[in-house]
Picture (cartoon, rainbow, N blue to C red):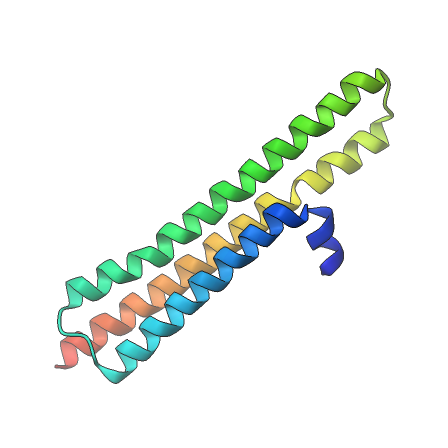
Length: 128
């Protein structure tokens, strides 16, 4: 697991991990508010839950930015080397897919959190 973190590039993988922890914190905070029933307006609560989706989308875009910057650097190195074997190129392309996959997983989890919390808030609101 840590091997993939370092292969994906500590900078972008660190940013993505930080975004995931922020999404998790927002989701847990809103879960506590929903379970306690401390919200007054369902629309206000839903607006707060949109941050989870927005940060998930930001993680998705950040993952692809990490891939593009990595590919740019790799192609610059290939250009200088003039010659490269197909297995080395395939290995580099495989490594470049780590950050977008991680970003997509974070987006997937953020949407799952959002769907569950939105459903719970709607149920709590209808029960009042």
